[in-house]
Image (cartoon, rainbow, N blue to C red):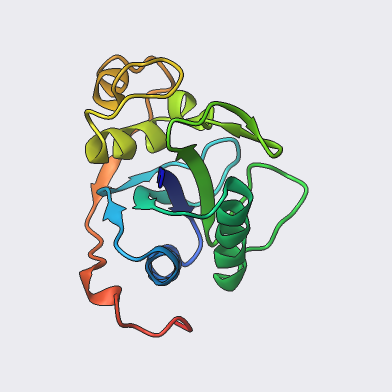
Length: 172
């Protein structure tokens, strides 16, 4: 079964939204690997700062099934979808990798280009999977982060503990 890496981000009801997202992911996929959480400015629009992290899990679900589950979790967190790609949101869940899959997988490009483009995606992924290799570049995420040349966002570690969330109800 492939390991899946997913980025999580929120700039509305940030802590509540991320905790809700993690609870839903745990219910759906069991044990999760969770990166540290980082706070950074909104990218692509003027808005409140985001909290971002990466989660990893192993699944037998297909890419479309995982994507559908991620979308359902976003909806459960009150995500409102508008025409703009960059906008405030309660919860954003993006599939980054699906094992070592490369290319268009049922309409979705893997690995996500966001890994190499955004510090708020690559840094938590490198924290969590430092020695794992990117399916296209063949370089480790740790090496990619050390040599990152993208926009230098100020990523500030943000203390958010998810350990108490495992048995919390999904409605809050």
